[in-house]
Length: 130
Image 1 (tube, rainbow, N blue to C red):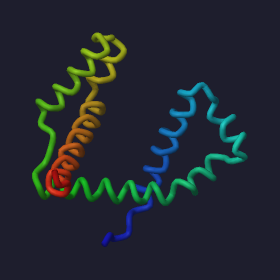
Image 2: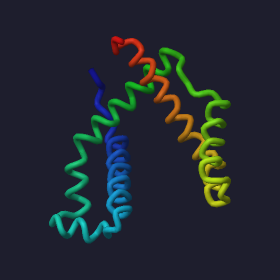
Image 3: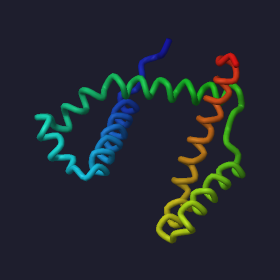
Image 4: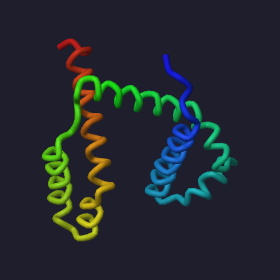
């Protein structure tokens, strides 16, 4: 059972979901504003629709974070660097990519992603029968 989730966390997740959704639509070559118009919706409508899934995403993220702490599962600096090196190799050491992946913010996102993956792998190893 959860204590009430601070609205600021839910709002932040809603903004992230809208950004992801917008990026996906734009990546398909469709202007996001035009897409919303075609659905007869606006961003506020999306925010309302995303409230419940955002709340679920926040709860899952909090559970994964807590489980990671309890089980002492965390990506190491070496694992983070290996992942960054793979990204650089994949993109042929492109200078634009290099300037993005060498930031502290990117490094923190990679660490968060890899830590979450460790927690999920740990869960699978205990819950999924082979």
